[in-house]
Length: 568
Image (cartoon, rainbow, N blue to C red; front, side):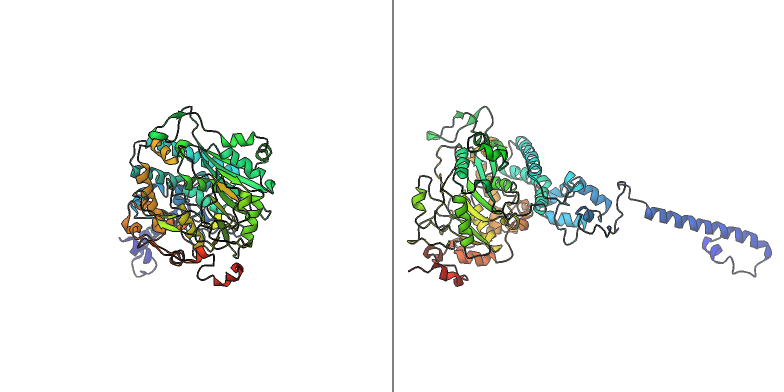
């Protein structure tokens, strides 16, 4: 007898014989019991937690407590399926898709969003799989100890990777670095950008100093504090890259020789043990990340690491580790910045050589960085390079003049620059390209670039026979590998600057473009407009003379500021 017929007809067939009724009623009761069991089992299955859930977990689709709202960042991940939460905690969302990232079939963002279903407002934040970070996320700003602990841990992983890939090709070196960054540094960087300290309004200056095996670094720090007007407001983020082994190698000497030398001077220790430096180190005004020579990734990545040592200072300054200073250089730098006719100014140029008399230079107009050119060397990939600064002005004025480019060796800006134009962790091993890229990113984000009214710092340009970072790359891996490695990574820079030969469909591996849009141009002004104003055509590799920089007038579109530059 069909179970459904018995259940549905138990009270309708009253014309059947009384003898059959007991049997039918019995069957109906059995069927009803089975139906209740099925219903109960279904309810238990639906209400039970998933097999991989942790005690106290939240069911998929459950709403967070209204009393917490979105103030607790962890509440956003509690909305996710338990399986995705587990992957987030174990750093496996990107990791198991690493092949797709390398091939370019998926971007990091697509993987994150596709796996987790994170909605608008979450984006690619900390919830992308950083293990303890994802489990123990704190909304409080990161402190120096937390930053240094992570960066030192990352450098240990980098050192192990470098040893493992000692004989790798340049493609293999990039692939190993990319894998390490995708798994560790990039997720951490996204969290850092969310948890950056609030900016203070106390006149403090963060001074980014990166040193590569530089014996002049201690003197640079001593003179910076000794000649600062307000040394109590100066906070240094020092990235010190040294040979710490008992047996180190010199730079290339005359005749191409390289000799054994002793350990590099410890800039941090020498400064902190000096009569000038002791009190500043004791007061926590020097934050240092020490790197082995074999961990060096080039000056751009050193500046990336230094930028993470910023702890809310009002102003950001960036210099090299072999500089000289004019008295009150700190206050004068900020005065120039505040005198510039812009809501978001950046003051920058190539300083005069360290032998210059800065007191005499303070009486005349500063040199300005105007002339770009396309590199013609086979190892420079036609990247835009910047010619030296020149003294174009016969009269010194009190208002900084507009300029088309920034220089990496002297730059001062509002520290919100670090939030709005963060350094890119996917640009290792490059020695060129950072200045034109940073110039374009700043301008498209709404920053206006100016040259100083007069020179405040001197720069030691010639360091013949001193060690260079690419020589470390050759010792860490194999001789000659740096040039093709740099050429490969420069495709990421050139892509952002609209070089047609570096478009995504023209370049392999596609991993060169991982998260590139997060560290690229701003949205306030167009790259096309910037390149036109500065006279650079990345398609034809031509430079046009624009005249405005050399003559000291505002660029096209900024004519309303001409009145500030009228001289008689």
